[in-house]
Length: 106
Image (cartoon, rainbow, N blue to C red; front, side):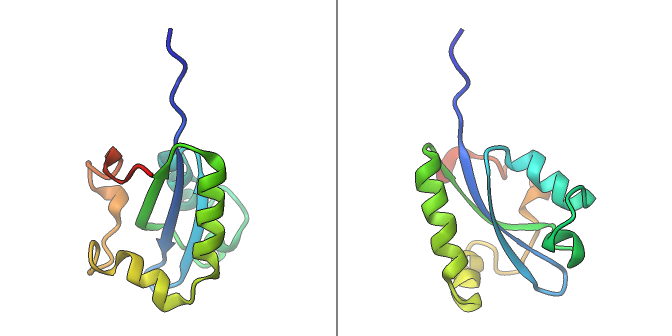
């Protein structure tokens, strides 16, 4: 049996009021649900940040970690610019059945 191919995701969430959060995970669907259900006592629970705006997929954890750190240093405007063209209406991508496509694999 082939070992499971691991992928790492850097993602941006937003609240309805526009608060942004940048995160990293190896299971994006599970992590979005954790944010949505408030399972972790954190910034995202306090500010109800649970709508997926943007994500990138990586094969290597170190590349994903470096990218997450890079995006976290961005000013708000630059974070929004990452998804402004592909998601101009700030739709929750996790509600779209095609949101886990491998098209964005880094």
